[in-house]
Image (cartoon, rainbow, N blue to C red; front, side, top):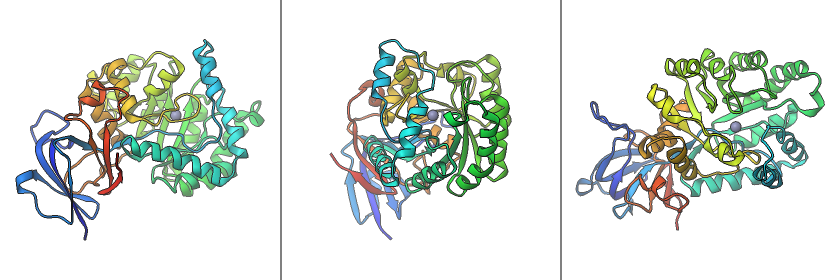
Length: 392
Ligand SMILES: [Zn+2]
């Protein structure tokens, strides 16, 4: 058994409040945290800390659970910087650029794709992310979707089959045939490597009937449901996700009162992706409206080469505070415990006895600094399963 003691923690965000405690962050001050065999074994006052094989002095800084980035598209090739520049010069975002990435991804070797995922995963780690969900969706053939998921599974247990990202060009005039292929041979090839199934339910992508059919096929083979919904305009995606018991509906930018009510009465998490609105210069979702209605909110990066090429949870968290009307505490919770809820995980996103020792030591005395000091590299050290990942 190996043990690590992190002591002199000035502020520990546990996301595990005591019974009756009002603050969901469950903050403890002047404590130490003992890790045994990769999980949290003890939290208590520094002066009472047990001995350990190794000691990490937090120096009075804030420590929080590692970020849980529950929405990322990391298996792709090429970049779309020129498209971004064109958008910033006034062209609208339509989602059509996905096909550009599909062409580059199909042409790439396994090793090229693997190197890109590895590079982005390392970027994420340096910025405090300890759990990431990775989607397919730039292959859109049976073989390319299966290999995208096979490569994604080398990096995470939370892999998502997104064969229904867009209808590829070769099926443009026969979308029914494409949906049949997604539900048939593509799902069969993808399912062994996938935990989740997802659909881009949006005008110009998949309508509600196609989306329902695809998600139902995934559920029938044991995959959990997630939906890209209500990003570009109002639509039925959010309510479809709630109807099917989705773990999460993602984007939620354009919501009606009925959408908010449906979410509030469900177990489905609303995952907000403000990097996408930033990168497409679009109106932001209103987290305040969701939170006030009692909806569980998560924050994620949507890291992808077209509409949100950021791997930074601290950046998204700062955007959420400034632009989505979240408090700093709500944003920290959404980026950690919220992400875990969106992935239906109880082992991450919190720091309590028995949880995975995935944690971040900040170069700051408080979690407030993540939004208060946007753009500043405040991640001093990251522990994954209790193992230090990076140092300054
Ligand atoms: Zn996405």
